Image (cartoon, rainbow, N blue to C red; front, side, top):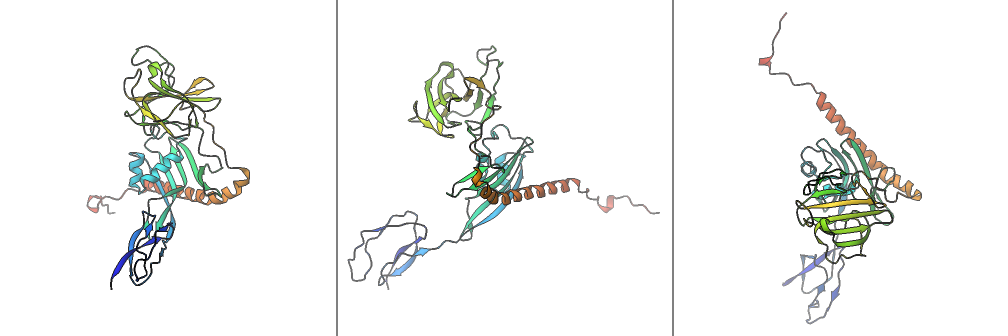
Length: 355
């Protein structure tokens, strides 16, 4: 008996069948177009039977994992060695991006603790891990975050008391770049060889490295500005303004008057203007005055509203408690290891005494 391959689609995938017509007495559609590129041929049916689309149920479960990592080499290397995925480590940096500059401020001995969920489909673990609660200790300062999913299904991260982790501005406009020159009002200029205030921060990076706007706003200037080279200025509101200089190019289509969102790429690192090497010069202005981007106080976004606090606490506090338990166990294990007695030397090396 002849057989013909047909496609069984996963139950959560939509399909549309078009141009179905009968051309033989075997009663099956000769043409079937299914608008789904991810369908897989996994079954056969007989010619004598009409085609019937079937559903294939996927069993999806989640499990809760925990991790505690001390940074000795680098965030990524130590995280990967602990069994965390690259995606999970990037989530971690995104959550704390408003509090920690991961490009310049990490030190050996920094540590983080995670509670995260891992999806399992048909018994196979996926890489779509999601952080539920996290704590990061950076140079002795502790930062904690919990995930809250609102009634619309949107997930956001907050401090355990309900303050948004997101702030009006990111700590840096370039990912994982090195500060080559800090904010300094009495800096010796490397080219002019005289004291000249450095009213921003320089981030050394390769030419072409993406530059992100640190906050929502409107492009107020885009073009050449003398020694600054290629410059973009973003007006964020009546009080805040940021400047990005020495760029090699701007994002295609970006123009004065365009709205930009925090994290949008606005251009690329370069060496235009008066510059000794490729870098981004970044300035932060408050009410027209120059401020150090690393020390200026940045306002938080909106906190959890009072009418959601009960739901927020019931959803987040169990995982925050689990986070503290993991941290306590790790601390206990570290202390226990440090005070464990040294092993005795081999019997042949021990001095024997007899009374």
